[in-house]
Length: 432
Image (spheres, rainbow, N blue to C red):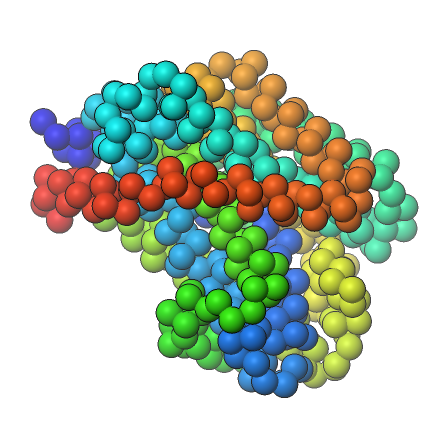
């Protein structure tokens, strides 16, 4: 009996809402809150070279949204969980292979990659890449919340404040990871989605509603129309290195372990459910989320030039979000809620990736609590060290993320042809 028939006969471990919540929060990650305000404004102030044109115009706003969609839309989600997730689901639950990155290379190398130094090197490269990718949002959170506390409550924006925030975050996501998928991770993701949807609805109703709707339609149309040119653009190496190479290097580094986690929580789901959610619905929702928050910032800037761009001067990423929320009705309350949302987003990513790294270390679906605690503390400690270095540490982190993604991209490559074959078997057996 094929794996996919067994998969379908197995009742899902978690409800559909919880499944969607965990996937959206984990894959969108803290970067989806930290960059959601800053990136559209960056492209608005300095138009991407593919589009060019004058900065600060309505056309520049639509182009900025389209470029943001390119970075966080269909290609990002394809890298993070669809094809590789299918491979893991089949090889782990049918063939009994461990949930480790080396398993992705089994269709090519067979048992040679499952034992010996080659497989160990593969696992090590992927763990390093995901640790680097997770440390980024954790560090960004310390900067974002510390800036917000000073702006809203007058608490000094110092390294001590940032360190306190990181320690609190480590405790939250480590306890969540220790409690497991069925408890802490589900609870955090559910809270995250409920708060995010509430804030989206509030901004849509009481913010620049007309621009949000128009910007989403126009930006998404530009995104689809220029999809191939944007994806293959090579005209400005400096710009590419700062944006596309960094983001896609980040996502590639996450790829194997993120897909492992998706496979872990998707048992009992059909191949159709998984592909529709991860490859279609999630990117569309992500683009709308960017329009709600980042698009609102563009609308406020168009109506009152300088209201967002001046706080953002010098690429002050933490300032962009609060500059936007302060323009909304009940701006203080909304700003506080966004800081809470950012914290929960990062905590959700932290607990999921702590769980995934622990699975790699043990090769089981239920790693020991001690292993989860160890990796949770390690990632938080690395973020604290990088923040203490200052801007040089963040630059070093960006370079580290891109470098570690190079070998990981080779690990992901075979899934381009093995996953469609497996997906066809699964679909045929499920009568789809």
